[in-house]
Amino acid sequence: ADDVSRWTLPLDWTRFFGVALDHSLTGVPVHRVTDHHAADMTTALAHVKAAGWCRPGLVLDPRNNDRTLEMRLGAYLARVSHDFPEAPPVLMLEPGADREKRLKAWLRTQKPDVVLSPDRTLGALVGKAYEFVSLANYDATARWPGILIDGEGVGRTAAFLLFSLLENPITAGALRPQTILIEGSWQEEMEVR
Image 1: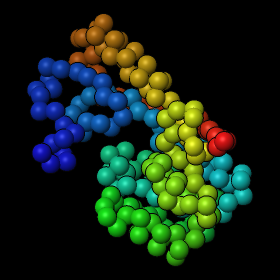
Image 2: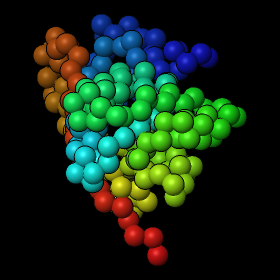
Image 3: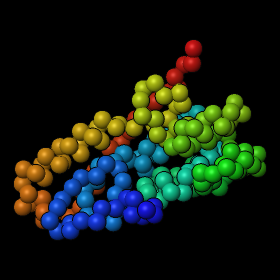
Image 4: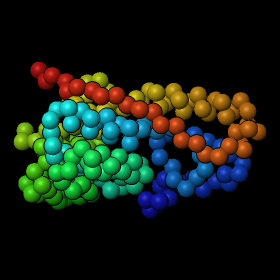
């Protein structure tokens, strides 16, 4: 199956309603509960600014960027235009054999003083030469400072929304798809012992 069909469900949606976590399904009229990528980016950049960094660099996977409706990218571009005029261009880093080589070339030429990404594996790749801020920590023991995603809050809210829809299916069927955004929180770096 191609990438598009992997994220869709071929159903007669006039007979169903549903709740999706994140933007995991596309092209279907379901309600969504997801982490608030734009607010979380704003929080991360506020901490970057408070730390005195002037050249934050953003690294995104293009497919993840598309799947999240470019919310991180949009918030980043809006903030850096005001607060970080020296920020380097965003690196769209596809998976592949040359991934690490492309990242290191970007670091060498663009010289960010901190790298932000939802891909936590980049923390080890940027090494000791650059600071790293994770935009997607999922538990309190995360190695990198950054945004702690409230996965439990997303799941709890999705369950509450689904139960509400099931309690009143006539009203539920008449609702246009809604998206509920759950903000994460800032998490300091864990001390490595």
